[in-house]
Length: 227
Image (cartoon, rainbow, N blue to C red):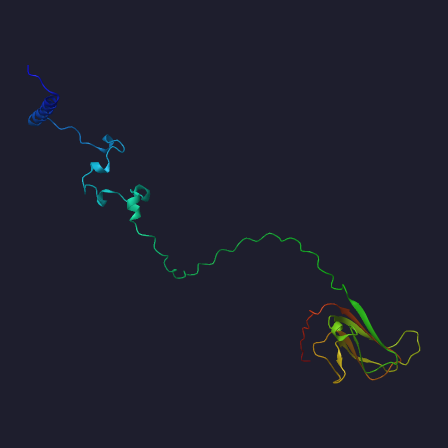
């Protein structure tokens, strides 16, 4: 029997395998099932196993390849991120929402300052009496007086139980204000005192009273009436 070297042995095996395939094909044997994905282990086929152009975009489903699947060389060739686009047009105003539920009751507020804190009575007595215009300011100094507002006032034309001349004395007007003695009229916007107008019938004494509070935010809501 002839001796076979290793090289010759491999050649014989290949030829024998080829002969078996030829016999099988010529004898009409039925081919086995086709190769499927289940027969391929993960990562057993790499890029070098595929011919150029054998896999194209038509064979890859959408989102099957993600950015982290690409090599650094590929991602380096991707373009830089573009600039932000211009703001879009303002959208239409949405429909009014439903009415909200009633809120919880708020906490009780701090106690307010007593409106009469710092209040004082001011009086001016005309010793020789009076019957015309008489007035009293909330303070002797005009600047200090204007820090107050007179909220009440009046006039006393005689003292009870004292014999005084009070024949015919009448009060025609009594209101908050300060007089302008040059014009004989009240000063506009001044409420820091009290003014009394009489009927020119003099009394032995005349005292004007004013209740002044340290508050200048009291407004005058003036109205008119056709009578």
